[in-house]
Length: 243
Ligand code: MG
Image 1 (cartoon, rainbow, N blue to C red):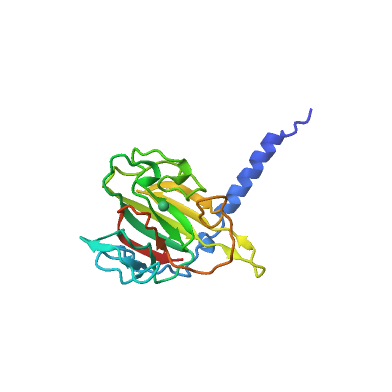
Image 2 (image 1 turned 90 degrees about the horizontal axis):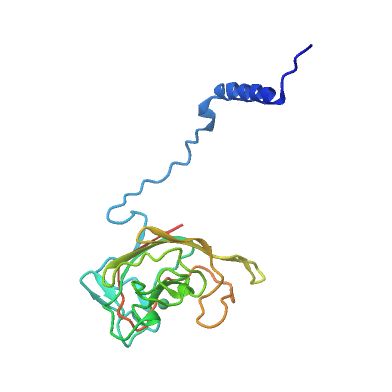
């Protein structure tokens, strides 16, 4: 009786043939030599970054009404009472943003949204919350690293009160159709002290305290704004790379 190869044996033979074929492909065919990535040095900040605050002055910032009036001392800038938030003079769309922030000492009787509240408003609209979320309970979509009132951070990586935190933010700006409708929403990835807390999160619209966020009006590149929520939050070492 004649023996026929089984299906399994046939597929093994096919795999061997493919493997032998790929052995014969010149590896050079899949090498790409152009373009060559630009060389970027990284000490103390990436050489292609725009330094927004180097610890010495507020030259790159405006106040929301007039000049920026936060307090600059010891390489940091701190929210000042009786003044507004501040915003970069430079406008940004897609970007990588590095920010370091520190909460002031806790005040007896204050908790939740009342401790170390500030925020980074990307394009002046979309808030990545800054809050002293170290042993401080509040609504989860309002704690440090939330896209405020929209997206809960994956974990709480907040350092103890008074220690410096870092945010590394990768941001994709929204685009708008000629009709004014949002075409593609904004997306944000955030690392808090090196820990991923927002993973390509879709932003639902401009941050709003009441009600649901939405994209009300089309907009272009815009300043990065830091919130004055009345708490003496400090910032240092702020830089951004346009993407
Ligand atoms: Mg805030």
